[in-house]
Image (cartoon, rainbow, N blue to C red; front, side, top):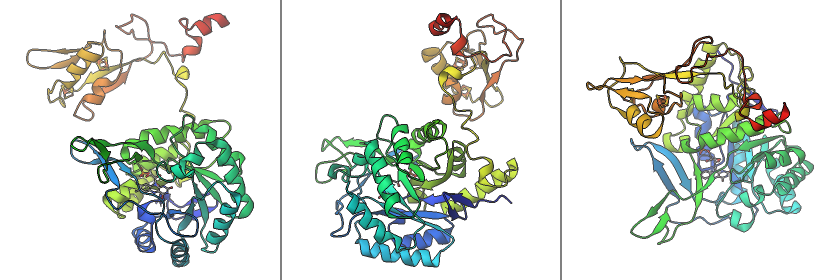
Length: 434
Ligand SMILES: Cc1cc2nc3c(=O)[nH]c(=O)nc-3n(C[C@H](O)[C@H](O)[C@H](O)COP(=O)(O)O)c2cc1C
Ligand code: SF4
Ligand code: SF4
């Protein structure tokens, strides 16, 4: 049986599945049940300064994007950090950590850009016995308008400065949670590392308006006839998060910086993908909000079964394994040639592949009078669009051509040697270098 225990920057947990800082981790009642369900750790809902707590709207705070089957694909929220008193949260965290010593409990923090404010909050949270802190530089709405959250996370100098203050004023491991609302995610990650942070976590939510009410002419969710942009999360953001995780994992400056992967993790497979791109563990929010805490059971059993099948004894065996294979476009092998192949046994003759290829790709699929669809190898550029639009999984596959055979489209023999754009004769840069 695979060993799912993880040691993330010295913080041990029985599995790599942590709940991200959000409503699921807002209070003791939730977190106890989450731990009972099997979650390996939680990042408590973000704490702010002592004093009157923040105030949330009293109307709807979520918007959503659905798939055709009304499955929730993307969630948008305009919620702020915890609106419960700091003292209450701290007391609850202390009790929970005392009763669940084997689980990871991280305090998420957001206070103004001021050393004394960070020193003060750190001293308060240390007493809870928490295992580390996560600095919320990501929240893109409400708090950012007050100069916190993503307003700080978008300035790498601030990120580095606060990480430095936190290491100076506490011995706790420091995780910097990054905002995706930035052009180059590597810059704040580098700043966090230079400031002394032990790890980064990403992504927080993406600036978004999910829909507009066309009677009120206002963005949704609508509060008394008006709407504000919110933070987008859920399965729809996973591709953006995976890319950002990979960018940090393969950047020479941050390649050894531990990463906690966040963004659309819904299944064990999502988690394995984040981890293969360099994340030491994952955090989950929307999936728990959509399906409840017990979803972690499937994540644990699925990951464990996959690891057993692959012969991975612990998560270290596959963390980062996809990083060396994540390259820039110019490094891709241009001698690799594939063709689409349609399985006539699986085809339901819907014609989607034909329409897609005929109208928007390379006119490489023929349709006979009895609606038999076949790939014309002499036209197929192997773009994969037909695979993506086909409603039957596995019906169309991309098959690599064997070296030594001739590609009927180009008339060229497929070569076994790897050759990329940097040496291609059509590349002016390559010619100039000759
Ligand atoms: C309603 C809601 C509230 C959130 N509040 C916080 C927060 O207080 N602090 C924080 O760091 N992230 C917060 N997040 C962001 C999540 O922690 C997480 O980064 C994001 O939702 C992406 O993960 P997911 O796709 O699994 O939901 C919140 C997300 C949602 C949906
Ligand atoms: S891979 Fe692209 S070009 Fe080839 S048949 Fe499919 S859609 Fe057409
Ligand atoms: S999209 Fe798939 S199922 Fe539909 S005709 Fe093409 S191969 Fe057949």
